[in-house]
Length: 377
Image 1 (cartoon, rainbow, N blue to C red):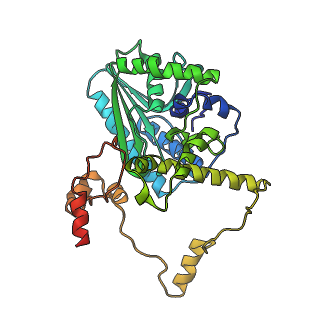
Image 2 (cartoon, helix red, strand yellow):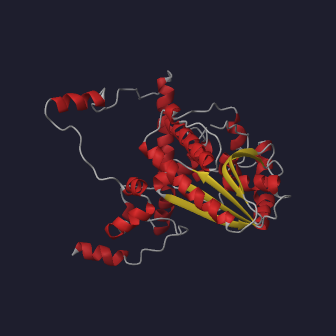
Image 3 (cartoon, rainbow, N blue to C red):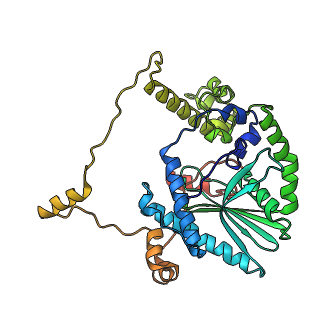
């Protein structure tokens, strides 16, 4: 597994410090708070790195015996990632000429960001094109590649490394998120990327490095170390306190639109404050009017293999037989065989209507009213 160090203005936190420059220095001396999800993601990255390096012909050691979070889902996710990376490499080779593939490549973009560096999951460099791919193991929030500051910083670093060797004109960025079965891509010209770096990235980076600029709350708060204590975020979310949630019919349309725009952020903020308060209480903090108690829990087996044996010895079958999911079935049969055998047995049901911001790229649900009328009959 490649060692990863993070700069003050790292690529992975660029979305935050670009939007909220003072947060960089505010978070600088805050201790890292390792989580189960972060460790899971780190181990999934290690597995992806191994599979990709092995495919590229490098001599590598299988890390699975040392991965405490390893399971079938992680294995399938790494294979999902590898499948698409192979396609990216084949696409790059289709242009002819030399193709360079770099795994877990450290890049330096300090020309635009003071002391800026990061580690790109994968770079594919050819004569005219640069491909930047990033693996995300999370399954809670879908990450979009469009104007993604993290990937754009990696691309800038790659241009600094290889710009003199290759006449790169186009950059294509991919985010691969297997547990959401999602592939997001974004294409930008070299010139447009450099314009963004000069007009947006560079000024924001200077303000962030100098500890200047204005605090701003938004989606970028998600991974901020002080998100639960941040006053600006509290002010932003507490604006909703003036609305009466019990009587939405009395609200003006414009007020409802404000609530819709902030509802998800408010919910996340409340959860962050609750988590912060609980951790503080467990460390001895006393909150007036609150106490820590033992939560509900469910019974569980201490040794599943032993349970299977005991039940079978008693003449019963302890395990349910379950049809493999589509991803697992595809892996077992192979894509070609899967399509040959099961193409007529697979469908993608219509999703339920969901209210989203107008900027969402999905087409509008034009038949929504009619569908609901039919359901009411």
